Image 1 (cartoon, rainbow, N blue to C red):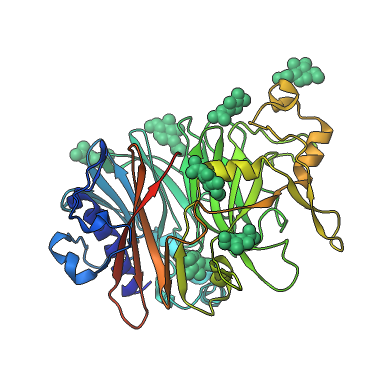
Image 2 (tube, rainbow, N blue to C red):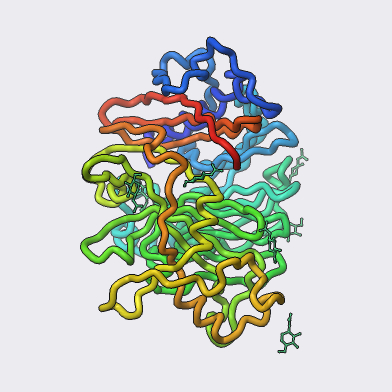
Length: 446
Ligand SMILES: *[C@@H]1O[C@H](CO)[C@@H](O)[C@H](O)[C@H]1NC(C)=O
Ligand SMILES: *[C@@H]1O[C@H](CO)[C@@H](O)[C@H](O)[C@H]1NC(C)=O
Ligand SMILES: *[C@@H]1O[C@H](CO)[C@@H](O)[C@H](O)[C@H]1NC(C)=O
Ligand SMILES: *[C@@H]1O[C@H](CO)[C@@H](O)[C@H](O)[C@H]1NC(C)=O
Ligand SMILES: *[C@@H]1O[C@H](CO)[C@@H](O)[C@H](O)[C@H]1NC(C)=O
Ligand SMILES: *[C@@H]1O[C@H](CO)[C@@H](O)[C@H](O)[C@H]1NC(C)=O
Ligand SMILES: *[C@@H]1O[C@H](CO)[C@@H](O)[C@H](O)[C@H]1NC(C)=O
């Protein structure tokens, strides 16, 4: 990953900081200065250079791929995962507090080199230089109480460590990163840890990336995954983000649309599982019995609706948009009918949800430890929701042609009228550095 990745990461660091001195987003509620450019409902476009006075930079000599960021709110620190390095930075001015090196050991590196450079190179796309492959790219960085749980690709042999949050060189535990972290630094993944200690990871499970899964491990509940090599569950997904909300964990991703018959089309999805799922018996053993997914609609209205998610797959036009979805709209779709295909030659048809008010445990008014055979058959059959989740407003909040938004930072401010502050970073390959857009969106309700 070359210098553009480094610059990217710096931009992301900068954007975090720009939010703070702005003073607009207070945790206590919105304090909006009438003359503030942020007060406008249209979206001011601020060139990078105009923000220069508020920008702090951190860069460690020879370190690249500053791709993972998390906060230690207790210490007011920013934790950064870069290639072969972890950093603790002061959140106010990005000064270095601690650096922890995390290289692959010589044996692992040697095995990676000898595994056949060609084999690895064939898997990688342009962008990673051949000599850069056998390194430790940090891909999971999660604060878990007073511990930092972090995983790296470790030269295609992923590993995870458990460290003291306030002393990153102090390692308590080292475990396999398989099914928790991708092997290939270019594979997109996401992970979260719940308060009860379960790790939910959505990642490629293997070296080639052909076995993607949403996988639960650690903690006190049995490990579970999405069904293996079954395109109705996940079809060449690119995982984006994950959230722990109420009885569920939610995953946002894009994938090839199984329900779309003509040609390859990529849809954006929200997926979810129940946190108290313990898998099936005989049927769906070690597999989620509560996995569901729905399509998200983010499109430009017009004579011929223009779907941004489809374009992501074909890469033919660079155009970007930001759509906002509320959780109630997502829940509503998950409570509605499924989309079901009897066999590969039949049409996809709506099928009533056999358990419309399912809240993770209401089946037969008991714990669903006692899922019936019928329940398990249904769980295996019905994965995709029929309805499409519509955005909060039909027109995307931001649309730009000929650019690709690469990072979106959303600052949610609690108040009577909830506001989102959205900062977008994008760049055009030809015209780096970037522009940024700063907008404010009034959102009602939840
Ligand atoms: C992390 O360390 C704590 C003890 O310090 C231990 O109880 C816990 O199981 C470890 N977690 C993982 C995921 O290794
Ligand atoms: C951090 O942990 C390392 C390894 O356990 C130890 O050598 C070092 O003294 C610790 N540093 C501090 C400041 O506690
Ligand atoms: C991961 O996501 C990025 C950004 O969306 C994309 O450019 C890249 O191709 C994805 N990686 C893979 C292996 O699909
Ligand atoms: C979680 O599930 C329980 C049933 O197990 C249900 O009573 C409760 O309302 C659900 N909570 C939420 C926030 O949906
Ligand atoms: C499940 O069913 C068995 C017998 O069918 C019963 O003994 C057990 O108590 C049930 N478990 C729960 C959690 O309902
Ligand atoms: C959530 O979005 C839907 C549209 O998808 C809209 O009908 C509904 O009013 C929104 N709810 C809230 C609370 O904003
Ligand atoms: C997506 O939203 C657009 C704009 O509101 C609408 O025209 C289109 O029908 C929607 N598509 C789906 C599949 O819901």
